[in-house]
Image (cartoon, rainbow, N blue to C red; front, top):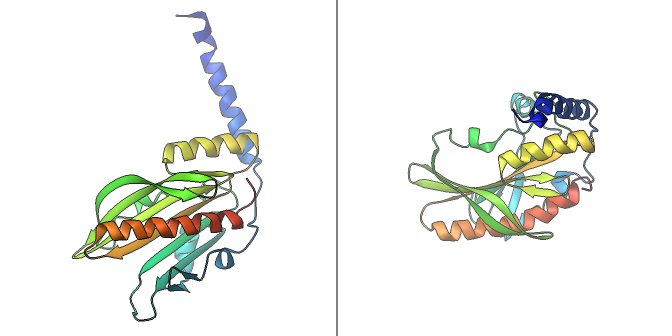
Length: 213
Protein backbone atom coordinates (compact mmCIF):
# COMPACT_ATOMS: atom_id res chain seq x y z
CA UNK A 1 0.00 0.00 0.00
CA UNK A 2 1.33 3.43 -0.90
CA UNK A 3 1.81 5.75 2.13
CA UNK A 4 -0.65 8.38 0.90
CA UNK A 5 -3.43 5.80 0.61
CA UNK A 6 -3.61 5.60 4.40
CA UNK A 7 -4.85 9.19 4.42
CA UNK A 8 -7.59 8.57 1.83
CA UNK A 9 -10.40 7.74 4.31
CA UNK A 10 -9.68 10.87 6.34
CA UNK A 11 -9.62 13.02 3.20
CA UNK A 12 -12.92 11.56 2.01
CA UNK A 13 -14.51 12.16 5.42
CA UNK A 14 -13.18 15.72 5.44
CA UNK A 15 -14.56 16.50 2.00
CA UNK A 16 -17.90 14.98 3.00
CA UNK A 17 -18.00 17.12 6.13
CA UNK A 18 -17.34 20.29 4.11
CA UNK A 19 -20.10 19.43 1.65
CA UNK A 20 -22.50 18.50 4.43
CA UNK A 21 -21.88 21.75 6.29
CA UNK A 22 -22.34 23.80 3.12
CA UNK A 23 -25.61 22.09 2.26
CA UNK A 24 -27.04 22.69 5.73
CA UNK A 25 -26.10 26.40 5.57
CA UNK A 26 -27.23 27.16 2.03
CA UNK A 27 -29.06 30.39 1.26
CA UNK A 28 -32.48 30.69 -0.35
CA UNK A 29 -32.18 32.85 -3.47
CA UNK A 30 -35.46 34.43 -4.67
CA UNK A 31 -36.03 35.21 -8.33
CA UNK A 32 -35.14 38.65 -9.64
CA UNK A 33 -38.36 38.73 -11.68
CA UNK A 34 -41.51 36.56 -11.83
CA UNK A 35 -41.24 33.76 -14.37
CA UNK A 36 -44.65 34.66 -15.81
CA UNK A 37 -43.41 38.11 -16.81
CA UNK A 38 -39.87 37.09 -17.79
CA UNK A 39 -40.98 34.41 -20.28
CA UNK A 40 -42.63 36.04 -23.33
CA UNK A 41 -46.41 35.58 -23.38
CA UNK A 42 -46.32 35.61 -27.20
CA UNK A 43 -43.60 33.66 -28.94
CA UNK A 44 -42.93 33.06 -32.63
CA UNK A 45 -46.51 33.97 -33.55
CA UNK A 46 -48.10 31.81 -30.83
CA UNK A 47 -49.95 33.01 -27.73
CA UNK A 48 -49.38 31.44 -24.33
CA UNK A 49 -51.92 30.31 -21.74
CA UNK A 50 -50.71 29.63 -18.21
CA UNK A 51 -51.63 26.29 -16.62
CA UNK A 52 -51.76 25.74 -12.86
CA UNK A 53 -50.44 22.51 -11.43
CA UNK A 54 -52.62 20.67 -8.96
CA UNK A 55 -51.56 21.39 -5.38
CA UNK A 56 -50.45 17.77 -4.94
CA UNK A 57 -48.29 17.94 -8.10
CA UNK A 58 -46.65 21.19 -7.03
CA UNK A 59 -45.96 19.73 -3.59
CA UNK A 60 -44.36 16.61 -5.05
CA UNK A 61 -42.23 18.73 -7.40
CA UNK A 62 -41.13 20.85 -4.43
CA UNK A 63 -40.71 23.99 -6.55
CA UNK A 64 -40.40 27.49 -5.09
CA UNK A 65 -41.95 28.92 -8.24
CA UNK A 66 -42.88 27.57 -11.64
CA UNK A 67 -44.33 28.42 -15.03
CA UNK A 68 -46.28 25.97 -17.17
CA UNK A 69 -47.49 27.64 -20.37
CA UNK A 70 -49.18 26.15 -23.43
CA UNK A 71 -48.74 28.10 -26.66
CA UNK A 72 -51.21 27.89 -29.54
CA UNK A 73 -51.96 29.76 -32.75
CA UNK A 74 -55.00 31.95 -33.34
CA UNK A 75 -56.40 29.51 -35.91
CA UNK A 76 -56.12 26.38 -33.76
CA UNK A 77 -57.33 25.24 -30.35
CA UNK A 78 -54.59 22.60 -30.13
CA UNK A 79 -51.30 23.23 -28.33
CA UNK A 80 -48.43 24.04 -30.67
CA UNK A 81 -45.83 23.67 -27.91
CA UNK A 82 -45.42 24.04 -24.15
CA UNK A 83 -42.81 25.55 -21.85
CA UNK A 84 -42.19 24.53 -18.25
CA UNK A 85 -39.79 26.23 -15.87
CA UNK A 86 -39.53 24.90 -12.31
CA UNK A 87 -37.43 27.03 -9.98
CA UNK A 88 -35.89 26.06 -6.63
CA UNK A 89 -34.65 28.84 -4.31
CA UNK A 90 -32.61 26.15 -2.56
CA UNK A 91 -32.48 22.38 -2.81
CA UNK A 92 -32.74 20.21 0.28
CA UNK A 93 -33.51 16.56 0.85
CA UNK A 94 -36.97 15.94 -0.56
CA UNK A 95 -36.98 19.24 -2.44
CA UNK A 96 -34.62 18.73 -5.34
CA UNK A 97 -35.03 18.86 -9.11
CA UNK A 98 -36.40 15.62 -10.53
CA UNK A 99 -34.84 14.50 -13.79
CA UNK A 100 -37.35 14.51 -16.66
CA UNK A 101 -35.87 11.15 -17.66
CA UNK A 102 -37.97 9.65 -14.87
CA UNK A 103 -41.27 11.23 -15.87
CA UNK A 104 -41.14 11.84 -19.63
CA UNK A 105 -42.20 8.29 -20.55
CA UNK A 106 -45.72 8.15 -19.16
CA UNK A 107 -49.34 8.96 -19.95
CA UNK A 108 -49.01 6.70 -23.00
CA UNK A 109 -45.77 8.27 -24.28
CA UNK A 110 -42.94 5.97 -25.38
CA UNK A 111 -39.32 7.15 -25.49
CA UNK A 112 -37.81 6.67 -28.97
CA UNK A 113 -34.42 8.36 -28.75
CA UNK A 114 -32.23 10.43 -26.44
CA UNK A 115 -29.42 12.72 -27.51
CA UNK A 116 -28.21 16.29 -27.07
CA UNK A 117 -28.51 19.46 -29.11
CA UNK A 118 -26.59 22.72 -29.26
CA UNK A 119 -28.56 25.97 -29.15
CA UNK A 120 -27.54 29.65 -28.88
CA UNK A 121 -27.33 30.89 -25.29
CA UNK A 122 -26.84 34.33 -23.72
CA UNK A 123 -23.05 33.87 -23.65
CA UNK A 124 -22.61 31.48 -26.58
CA UNK A 125 -23.77 28.01 -27.65
CA UNK A 126 -24.99 25.67 -24.90
CA UNK A 127 -25.77 21.95 -24.86
CA UNK A 128 -29.28 20.77 -23.93
CA UNK A 129 -30.92 17.36 -23.75
CA UNK A 130 -33.13 16.24 -26.63
CA UNK A 131 -35.72 13.46 -26.32
CA UNK A 132 -38.04 12.02 -28.95
CA UNK A 133 -41.36 10.59 -27.71
CA UNK A 134 -44.27 8.87 -29.44
CA UNK A 135 -47.91 8.21 -28.57
CA UNK A 136 -49.91 6.58 -31.34
CA UNK A 137 -49.41 8.66 -34.48
CA UNK A 138 -48.34 11.72 -32.51
CA UNK A 139 -44.71 12.36 -31.71
CA UNK A 140 -42.99 15.06 -29.69
CA UNK A 141 -39.52 16.53 -29.44
CA UNK A 142 -38.51 17.51 -25.91
CA UNK A 143 -35.63 19.83 -25.04
CA UNK A 144 -34.64 20.26 -21.41
CA UNK A 145 -31.74 21.60 -19.38
CA UNK A 146 -30.72 22.87 -15.94
CA UNK A 147 -30.04 26.58 -15.53
CA UNK A 148 -28.75 28.57 -12.59
CA UNK A 149 -25.76 29.92 -10.67
CA UNK A 150 -24.22 31.12 -13.94
CA UNK A 151 -24.44 27.75 -15.73
CA UNK A 152 -26.54 26.00 -18.35
CA UNK A 153 -26.05 22.25 -18.09
CA UNK A 154 -27.47 19.11 -19.71
CA UNK A 155 -25.41 16.35 -18.09
CA UNK A 156 -27.13 15.19 -14.90
CA UNK A 157 -23.89 13.99 -13.28
CA UNK A 158 -22.23 17.37 -13.73
CA UNK A 159 -25.39 19.03 -12.40
CA UNK A 160 -25.13 17.00 -9.19
CA UNK A 161 -21.42 17.72 -8.83
CA UNK A 162 -21.90 21.48 -9.32
CA UNK A 163 -24.79 21.37 -6.83
CA UNK A 164 -22.59 19.78 -4.14
CA UNK A 165 -19.67 22.08 -4.86
CA UNK A 166 -21.67 25.31 -4.89
CA UNK A 167 -23.63 24.31 -1.79
CA UNK A 168 -20.35 23.79 0.05
CA UNK A 169 -18.40 26.77 -1.31
CA UNK A 170 -21.04 29.49 -1.84
CA UNK A 171 -23.98 28.07 0.18
CA UNK A 172 -26.13 28.26 -2.95
CA UNK A 173 -28.20 25.53 -4.60
CA UNK A 174 -30.76 27.63 -6.49
CA UNK A 175 -31.52 26.23 -9.94
CA UNK A 176 -34.20 25.92 -12.59
CA UNK A 177 -35.29 23.02 -14.75
CA UNK A 178 -36.41 24.22 -18.18
CA UNK A 179 -38.38 21.97 -20.55
CA UNK A 180 -39.86 22.59 -24.00
CA UNK A 181 -42.26 20.11 -25.64
CA UNK A 182 -43.16 20.39 -29.34
CA UNK A 183 -45.73 17.82 -30.58
CA UNK A 184 -45.68 16.91 -34.29
CA UNK A 185 -47.01 14.25 -36.66
CA UNK A 186 -44.77 14.25 -39.74
CA UNK A 187 -41.86 16.67 -40.10
CA UNK A 188 -39.36 15.79 -37.37
CA UNK A 189 -36.62 18.07 -38.68
CA UNK A 190 -38.95 21.07 -38.68
CA UNK A 191 -40.13 20.28 -35.14
CA UNK A 192 -36.54 20.00 -33.87
CA UNK A 193 -35.55 23.26 -35.56
CA UNK A 194 -38.57 25.00 -34.09
CA UNK A 195 -37.88 23.65 -30.59
CA UNK A 196 -34.29 24.88 -30.79
CA UNK A 197 -35.50 28.31 -31.92
CA UNK A 198 -37.87 28.49 -28.94
CA UNK A 199 -35.03 27.41 -26.64
CA UNK A 200 -32.84 30.24 -27.95
CA UNK A 201 -35.55 32.70 -26.85
CA UNK A 202 -36.30 31.04 -23.51
CA UNK A 203 -32.66 30.81 -22.36
CA UNK A 204 -32.00 34.57 -21.94
CA UNK A 205 -35.52 35.11 -20.58
CA UNK A 206 -34.93 32.59 -17.79
CA UNK A 207 -31.48 34.05 -17.20
CA UNK A 208 -33.02 37.50 -16.64
CA UNK A 209 -35.34 36.09 -13.95
CA UNK A 210 -32.75 34.02 -12.08
CA UNK A 211 -30.52 35.40 -9.31
CA UNK A 212 -27.19 36.62 -10.60
CA UNK A 213 -24.68 33.81 -10.99
